[in-house]
Length: 314
Image (cartoon, rainbow, N blue to C red; front, side):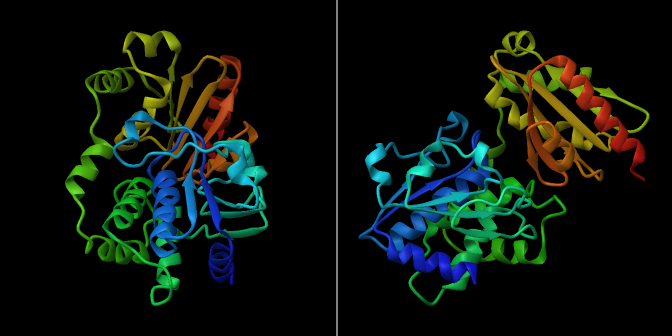
């Protein structure tokens, strides 16, 4: 069983370094840092680190450790919530002695010496709590700090329990986690409050999105538009869900222009979109995915492909 093997490896190693995907969201940080704090609480003699680039908007939730390359020597590396190696934040993960993959995305890129992939889980944070439940009466321990991280990750990846991935187990685990004393209101405010500039950009999106007869919607946020509203590309993640409430939309895509790439964030109410994202150097879930393209011409091709998916979906 994967969970037992992972627990054995955690017990075996003295240094454990935990990674997750680039441009972290709540689930990436919740699973990564929740696992880190769980291991530290359960094995106080071990050195445990969480690494990767940070998103200032999520500093309230979790912060990263800064370590040098030497720490990877004879270390166990665990990668959370990352479907493919190209999206692992901090590519030094290869310097470790062994690598473990823990993820809930489709396993299109099997990597690591040990893999635990559960596509039925609502989030990787849910899997981390599942890992704790597996050994609840053994060595693993939980406290309010860990419960906050895991709960926040579950909330983020289920859209506050609205997405279809939310299961009976998800609600059961959430109920158990909130028995620990942490400020849920402050957590929700941190995850969902937006700055004034982002609110104004949200208004621009609602005024300028396109909607085709097939139910496909798209919006392009160029560098000029982002500069006009004084919004950084990394902050646009809080905008992607805004079109989900628009009647008649089956799937929608945001194109966000950065200095050297155009980020693609695509969501769906039905058509399966992760295979389309994979076609454009990306991937993700059937109803939530991302990709990277190099030109607006390629963006137009993506729109055409998404339009075809929506037209075929009934």
